[in-house]
Image (cartoon, rainbow, N blue to C red; front, side):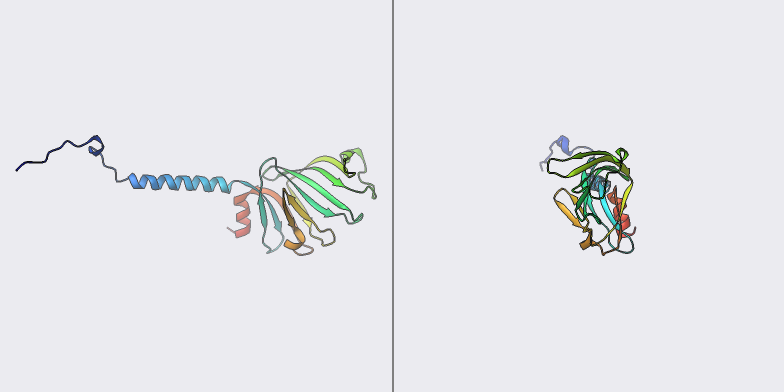
Length: 181
């Protein structure tokens, strides 16, 4: 009887890992956890209504600009307030654009730098810091939040008279408020 003796190849010699499949699984889990942490710590601008109403949010980042557009209650003309996201709980109202000086705004140089734009509107640069922006929804004002091409009609989302807190926060903080955990 001849024996079939062959040398084992180096890949067949020594330690044979039963971890080979488990190692891929561990790497996959680590990648999934890292991706989840990255996603959960992204900044969002959230609109948080009072009471039991459902909050909504849009993804943002440091340096992102969004604005509140509404009709002024006295002048009945469009008004826009522009905000820049500086970080969590850190917004800056950079400037305001409006069409009419009928009620006398701005009152003094301390209100900000006043100018007229090329399209005939007026602009007031003020750079005021905010942790959050609180606004009460009124159908007469028709408030909207505009972020790039997305328009959030606050009258359609929340009922008349609702107090809405707008703030920049981490996505996990928004989830905590929205889902209650």
